[in-house]
Amino acid sequence: MREPRIDYAAVFQALPGMVALLTPDLVYADANEDFQRLAGRTREQLVGRYIFDVFPENPNDPAAAGRRETQASMLRVVATGERDTMALLRYDIEDPERPGRWEEHYWSPVNAPVLDAEGRVVLIVHRVEEITELMRARGGPGGDTDRARVLEAELYTRARELQEVNDRLRKAHAREREVALALQAAMLPSPGPTGRHGAAVRYRPAVGALNVCGDWYDLVDLPGESLAVAVGDVVGHGLAAACAMGQLRSALSAACRVTDGPAEALEALGLYARSVEGAESTTVVTTFIDWDDHTITYSCAGHPPPVLVHPDGTVTFLDQATDPPLSARPEHLPRPQAQTPFTEGATLVMYTDGLIERRTEDIDTGLARLTDSLTRHRHADPEVLADALLADLLPPTGNADDTALVVIRL
Image 1 (cartoon, rainbow, N blue to C red):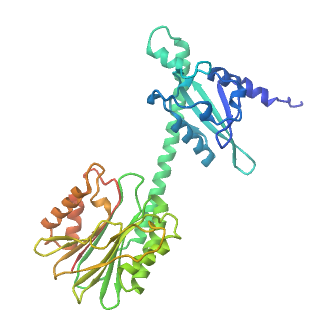
Image 2: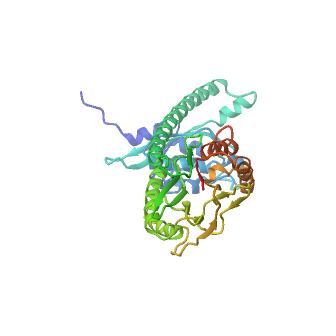
Image 3: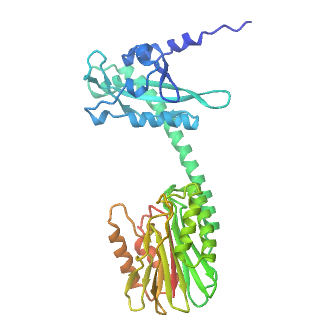
């Protein structure tokens, strides 16, 4: 039996419901009859035109703005080659016969890719369920109850699809978090022997699946019984941040061993960071501790300042050598450095912004909280002090950003 010859162009036009085809640039390639009828636009008014030129947002009602969500969904399809089901949204349509008059509409869209032989997205199938009738039916008497039930069933199906997509995303984020944290742990070992100078390090990942694995610390033995200590923070999260962090940490560790001071080490790191994807705007602070001279030489690239806690409880922020983050300047310039003395029994504390910053607070509030905690616990050994700082400064519900912390008894 011969297979029937199917006119797919005719099938497309006869499809029930609103269906349009768009290019990856979001230009209409075609639209079926239901789409033209319900959208109030002819095929000639659609084909070859950018979607948001044909259907701009209603400028008179912010509640009707759905362009950002629609555009993001379509671009996700282009980027991933996967179907994207959108939630219910309101997007008003301007009456083509009466410019300036907008009609209220509610839509439930689905965007799906059409792939070529190489797997590239060549078209977007934009299927839309017009549910304005349902919204009106549920809003008062006189609506079509049967039609409302049909549309409710359709919305239920869409909701299940969205739930499945969200479940897949959560599982993917959980896997990425697990791998990134394992990589982070491998690159942030416990400090080696520091003689009679006690040291403690801590890393606390953020509570959520994101905002993890950009922070690091490092302790490097230098010639002459000195010690370099660095703390840094890569912008970003997940595996990308962990990989960038690992490269920068290793590069800074090497630079500290061959340069004459922390400023030169950060200069070398800044030049290297230009070739590392994801290293832009990384913040880092480096200190060189000279045990014989009882001095700390430091340089800071956009990072929160280290804190020196004196035995009498006085707290000093090492903020006299601050400079922009890595790769923030288009040209290479020498970085500043400063030096401060310390007395035996003082404590040096270095940290990332997750320890002190809160979205609802000024940064000075977090620094004051840090100062208070350090003053109260200054006599505790480094391990106890590190735990006390985390308990005092991190929210009881968990930190929104990852946190690295180094405590050294001088």
